Length: 147
Image (cartoon, rainbow, N blue to C red):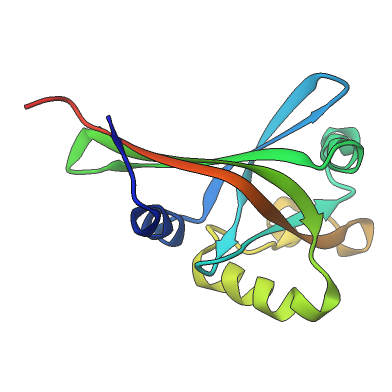
């Protein structure tokens, strides 16, 4: 195992567009796959309010801003070689004046656009909200078997 430099962490986050967002409420964890954008400084998450799981994502995000986010990638040519990034911080709603930057980061590397039509969800039943993660701690590691 090897620690990644901040430049290597940026490369992994820029190359990927989906990770796992971890939220908690009343001591109960909740993790969900989340598409994200990253512009070298800030994370952006498109969250659809009003879809699925009886609003669990909304309840957890509103109850406790503390969150974790994990991203990993595996080398397709060497499947036993992979990298992971783990971040801890506070989830916050992106303010109107920063929405353009958040949408640009989503367009640059999000795994999928927030297209509700894909899931057959009527547009008038959901609200798209943009969130960011104020990162307090970020670690990156590379795992590879010894030669």
